Structure formats: structure tokens, C-alpha cells
Image (cartoon, rainbow, N blue to C red; front, side, top):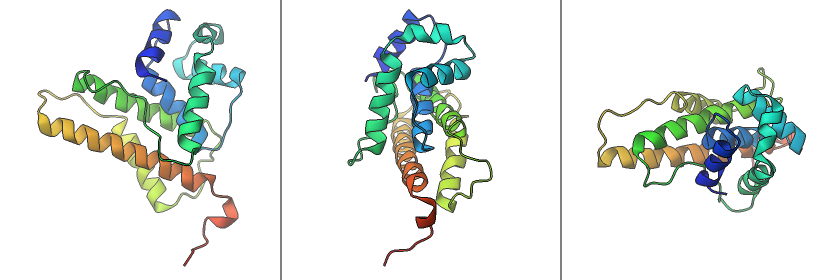
Length: 182
């Protein structure tokens, strides 16, 4: 799946929102251990966009396909997962905004996955979620330079690894989380 394909779907369905935010929401839900049927996906996206479910249905098969793609990336054996973001030839500020949207969507999806607020998260996971919340508030740059590109690349890599860490931690059965292997 491609950022531009999803963006085109949003335009054709006349929906507000960001492909990155949608992908983040789906990934958050997956990391929270919740599956989603097609109807649930429509309801979740409608809630996130504050739109009527009928409007979201205009996306057609794109939504279940993106969910399956996201699940395969996160749950697969390899470390294939990448946040769905605009290509590197897009202006850096637009990519930063999309990264912030992705993190916001991820936190929304994770929160809607049924993860209880009082869930005891390991220190690394709690730190990663705080960092993702901070990234979701990322601002625009006044001037761009080569160092900003490098920083953006590092930030995307951090988000990628943080999501895989959250998924790995939350997918471990509760009784096994505290066991240490030697």
C-alpha cells in the first residue's frame, strides 16, 4: 500500500484526514491486541474523523486492505514495518506533519484497543508512548537544512522501533511478561 493511493482514496471519498493518521490508528489497534472486522474499521475511522459511517464506506476495499497490510507488517517475522508517510521528495514540513498525524492516530488506535488506562506498562513502553505523544505535537520548521533531514530520518526510525517494541511487549501473555530468560 502506498501513501498516495490512500490519499487519493480520501480525496475520492471527499473525506478529511490523513493517510498517515489512518495507518497509525490501525497500527495502534493492532499493537493493542484488537482485531477488526470491516464494519468495525468503518466505525473506528468514522469516529476518528468525526464523520458518518456511510461517508467512510466510500473508501471501498481500501480500508480492509490497509488493515491487512498493516497487520502483516507489524506481526510478521521480519522487521518490515514502516509508518505510512509521504515519500522523501515531499517537502520536509509536510512529512513532519504526517509523522505527527501518524503518532496521533497510533495513540488513538491504541487507546481504542481496549487497553485499560491502569494497565501497568514496562518503563520502556511507557517512555515510548510519551515520546510518541510528544512527536504527535511536532511543529513546522522555519528553515530546512541537511541536519533536519537526518533528524527526520532518525525520528521515523525511532517511531518504527517504538511501535515494534510496544507490539512485542503487549502481545506477550500477561503471565510471561515478568519472566527473565538467562
